Amino acid sequence: MEQTAKKRQTEPADRVISLRQVLEGMIRDGMITADQAKPLIATQARNSGEHPLESVARRKWTNAHPPHEPLGIERLTRWLAGKVSMPYARIDPLKIDTAAVTSLVSFPYAERFQILPLAVDGERVIIATAQPFVREWERELGPLLRLEIERVLANPTDIKRYLKEFYSVSRSIRGASAADGAAPSGILNLEQLVELGRADQLEPNDRHVVNLVDWLLQYAFDQRASDIHLEPRREKANVRFRIDGVLHTVNELPPVVMSAVTSRLKALGRMDLVERRRPQDGRLKTKTPAGHEVELRLSTMPTAFGEKLVLRIFDPEVLRRSFEELGLSQDDSERWRRMLEQPHGIILVTGPTGSGKTTTLYSALRKLARPEVNVCTIEDPIEMVEPSFNQMQVQAGIGVDFANGVRNLLRQDPDIIMVGEIRDKPTAEMAIQAALTGHLVFSTLHTNDAPSAVTRLLDVGAPPYLIKATLLGIVAQRLVRTLCPHCKQPVAAEAFDWGPLDPPDPLPEGTALFVPKGCDECRNTGYRGRIGIYEIVTMSPELRRMVAPDVDLARVRSLAIKEGMHTLRQSGARKVALGLTTVSEVVRVAMAEAEE
Image (cartoon, rainbow, N blue to C red; front, side, top):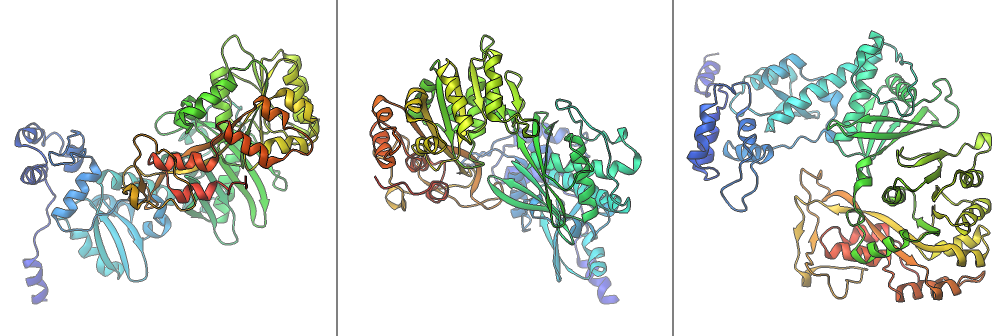
C-alpha cells in the first residue's frame, strides 16, 4: 500500500487543458501570432463550457506555416495529439460496434468524463478522450473492465455528438426489444413531409422504434449513403449502407427490433403492413440534418428470415447540377445539348442498374420543363417526384403498362414524353409512334454500350425503317468513384501506369495524374464521391443507313468513333488525366471494348 501511495504521489495531478495553454502552444509552434490570440484569451471566461480546440476552430484561422491549411477541429486535434504524445483517432461511426462499446461504460460516467469507447476485443479497449491530462477514469475503469486501456485523442465535437447518439441508439434498441417489437401504425400521403423526431405524436411504447428510424435516416444522410439495406438473419439482422457504390455494415439489430423498424418504415411509405409474402414498393419524403428535402423509394422482398427492406435515397439537389458537374466533357456536353434541342425523335440512355441513367434523364427533363412545355412521364416506379413534370406510375395489376401508359399520355397534349424503359415490342412501337407524331421521347435500355442500343431495338421487334426515322442519339454511361481530394497523391506522368487504358492523345491541358492513398475523410478507401463517364452517339445520315436487320455492330461502332464518339474507356481515361479517378476504377466499370 505504501508503494501504491508513493506511485500516486509521483503521478501528475489531473488537469483540464485550458484555452491559454492551447493558444500559447500554437504561438510557440508558429501556427498563429500573439495578436491573433489576445482577443480569444479575453473571452475564455465566457466560453468555459466549450473545449479549447472548439473555441479556436470557430475562429476559422489559417496556419501561418505552409501549406497554410485551415485550422479546423480535426487539424487542431492532430496537432494536440502530437504535442502530448498521444495516438490520434478520427471517429468513424461505420467502424464502431455500438452495442459492444456502449455496454462497457454507463452513459452518465462516459458523459461526466467526455470519453467514448471505440473498440474492444478480448484483451484491450480503445477509449477516446479530448482531455489528455485527465486520467482519473482510466485508473477507475482498468480494474473494473479487466482490460488494457488504450487512450487516444479525438475531436471533442465528435465525442460529444457520438456519445449521445450511440447511447441513444442502444437505449432505443433495448427499449424496442423489451416492448416486444410493437410497431406503430399510420399512413402518410405521398407528398406529406415526414417530420423526424416527432415521437410525441405516437403512443409512448412506440417511441423507441421512432427514435431508431429517425437515427437510421439521419445517419444515412450524414454518411452520404445512396441506399439503406435492412436484412433479416436468423440470429441478428444487418443494417448496411451503400456509400460510393460500396456496401458497409453499420449496425446489427435483434430480429424483433428489425421487424418493428421495417413495419414503421412500411407505414411511412404507404405500404401494406400485414402483407409480408409478396414484394411491395413505397416512398416517403423527409429532410436531411442540413434541412434539404430528400425522397426515399422503399422496396420489400420476402426472404428466409423475414422481410428485407431497401431504401434508395434520391437527392433533388443532383438535378440542379450542370451537365459538366455530372461528368460530361465539353465535347459530349455539346453533343447532348444538340440532341435536346431537337423538336421530335427518340433519345435513349443506356447502362446497367445503378449507373445514373435516372439522374441524367431527370436533369435533362428538368432543363426542358419550361412553363410553355408539357412534360409527361410513365415510370415503374416513379423515382423522384418533380413538380414540373406530370408523372404516371405503371400499375400492371390494373392494366397500366408502359405501352398503355404512352398511349394514354398521347391524349394529354404532351410536348415531351419520358418512358421509364423500353422492354418489349408494344412499348417500342408506342415510343416510335409518339416520336413520329411530333413528340420528343426519352427512354432507357439495358445495353453494354451505346451502339448496342440499335441491335436491342431490333431485337424487341422495332422495324429498321422506323428506327432510322426516329432515333436521334444514344447515351451510354457508368459511374466511377472519384479520388479523395484530401489524400490523393500526385504521380509524374512518365511514371504513371495506364494499364489497359490508352492515355488521351494529346493529354488535356492541366493534366494532373494521381493515385489513391486513403485517409480518415474517405475511410482509407482513397475515394470519395462518384462521377459519370459517357459514350454518346449522334445518329448521322451514314449511321442511319447502316440500321438493318443484319446490322454489323462492329461497323456501327467504328463509324461512330470516326464521327467523334468517345468510348466509355476513352471518357474514363480523360477523367484519369484530369486527376478525378483511377485506371482501376475505369477498368472495373467499363467493359472491354468490342473489336473494331
